Image (cartoon, rainbow, N blue to C red; front, top):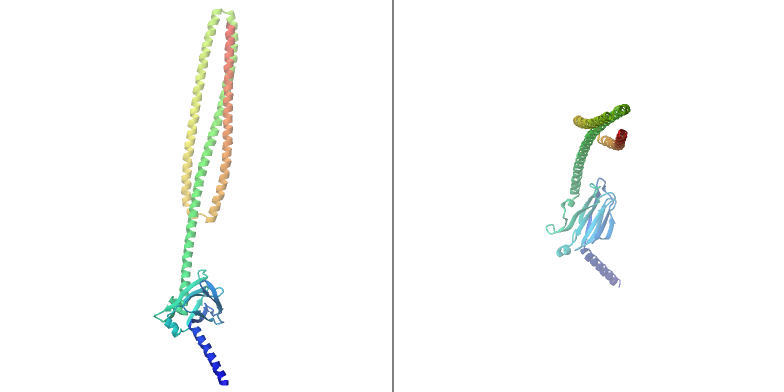
Length: 395
């Protein structure tokens, strides 16, 4: 009885062992070590994914050792990671020939080197692991991961390329900064020269306007004095003629009527000729003064333009020689902007003053013309009334 019980137990063990062997025949053992760069074997994590879905996770031991199984004739992604290190992703294609699966597969051994980010990368696709008939085994498609030495060599190359890239970027940055500085200096120089030219032109224009204004005021004053003198002479002449007329009337009354009439006609003709002569002289004088004023303004304008051009050329030459002493980019830019703001305010102020001055001169000219017209009308009216009265007395 006891023998039968032992035989039964042996049969159960045999069945269980057979089942275990069949289960193992459909799996492949993956083992190895995760090495953290510069730290040696350390604890890391791994995740097994199938079609993007997580199906298993695990951790290495304190020495970085790990081991897990993957089903045959399938495809898996295995990601190894550790905090602060670049994750490594491996694609396992576990499809193998039937005879190889039947014969049984040796465990797949692999070492994984994790390193700190070089180019801010977070994860690296490492390699495909698949069946190779020439090796009659699963192998890394990327030869770099077939040994830890190769992985360390690749990491060294990667870091050297980083140094090269950083050197290139630094050189490019220095070159860009230099080009930007030169461009800013050139722009500052151009703005300064432009501002100097504009300032010279503005000074010349203001000087020309001031000179023209002075001459116009001088001319207006002289013309007013001349008109006052002519008015005084005309008044004195009128009084003298009035006195002469009174005496003539007295003499005419005493003299014969015919002689008085002849003298009156002769006086009227002479007076008309005198007025015509004075009017012609006044018109000729006005035209000559106008021509002299126009010529003076033109000469002033040409002289101002020539002076402005000379100053601009002199300033441009001086600025070209001073190029090497230009201030730093930020200071040059600040000064140029400050000067531009001040000049804009100055231009606005000068424009307002010029407009006010133009309006005042226009008003003064209009008022002077109106006064001259009223004076001329009053004089003409007085002469006409005088002539009517004289004729009435003679008749």
